[in-house]
Every structure is written in structure tokens, then in C-alpha cells.
Length: 248
Image (cartoon, rainbow, N blue to C red; front, side):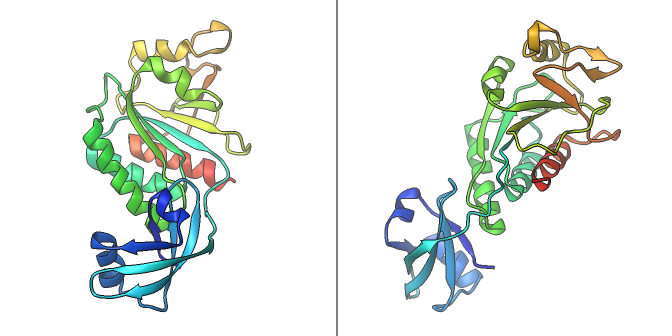
């Protein structure tokens, strides 16, 4: 597989890219690429080009940009809105979701979350996403954001089909259509009453999202099941993304 490297959009629009420091060491010392090897460069926003090694010495490499390269991105847009897990679990979630081709990951502030995400945490997760994209050969980085409050949900769900994962729901997560999908994954202790009320405000005709035998009632955000087992936040999010993206 042709090695992939994430570069800036400006670099991808030129005809030469110079690699130094960490990128140079990773490709030409750790991975031991040679003059005959080609690379695939992406700006992380869906654009990718092939590149050949024009110059190589002990400190830097000069790449000559070639024609377009395949994006290898899924057609379906899947967004995950996830109650913030612990940092190591959030990193695992971002890594695997990036590999699958998730378009965006928003971290939700919840009364039962273990903590909230901050700017430093998002920057760390962005580095995880870059490494995962280079490993899997995609072209689009997921948009990472948060912490989001319940009042932001209408804007976050705009233009998509919204589903709340609920182990008591009787309807499985629908995977057949190609519409953009947003999946909400609550904290492991479950949504608090006021958070369910906020979800209720998103329902059609003002009908509340209420428990009916444990199942979230039909609404603009609908309850959906991944099975009867209780999954950790990051496991549920990645399982849902895999089902939605693999079906396309």
C-alpha cells in the first residue's frame, strides 16, 4: 500500500513539498522509504495526490506532486455525538472512527460523563486522528468538537437522521439507506432525566421522547438498538459507525 501523509492544503496545491523533522524521520528512517517509492498526500479534507521523491538527503526529502489519488472515503456521512469517555478511551474511539471514515465526532457534556473535553484534549485527539488517517489511507479527517451542551443538539442534528442508542429499543439501527446519520451515544450510566427532556424537545410535533418499556419513542431522534448487551461508550460508537459505513 502506498504510504499516506497528511499535509496542509497549501502544500497540496503546489508542485513541490519539502519534508523535514518528524515526517522525514517517520517515512525515511522508521519506514525506510527509498528514492523509487511513491507517496500519497492528503490535506485531510478529502483531496489527495500522488507524489514522487525528487530529492533525498540525510535531513530532508523533496517530493514532486503528481496527479490525483483516490480519496478512499465512504460516501455516507456519519456523525457521532458521544458522552465524553476517559482520555484513553476517547483516543481509541477517535482512532477507530477515523479508520472507518466517520465524518465528525462531537463530545457531549453529560451529568454522568466521567469528564469534559477541553482544547488541549481535542488537540491531542486531532494528532491521533492524523496518525490513523495516514495508517488507513483515507483522505478526510473527522471534525472533532466539544464539549457540546444539550441546547446545541438541534444544530448538531440539522440535515441528518438522528438516532439515540438504547439497549432496550426494539428497532435495530437502520443501515440500508444512504442519508446522513447522526448517532448519539449516552454515558455508561444512562441519560439523566433532564437530558432526556432535552432530547424530547427535538421530537416531531412537540411530542416528548419518553420511555415506553425502556424504548425511546419515535421522534426526530429515534431510539435504536445494537443488541441487548450493555456496551461501553466507545464500543457502542465504533460498532454503530461500522454498521452504518460497511453497509454502503
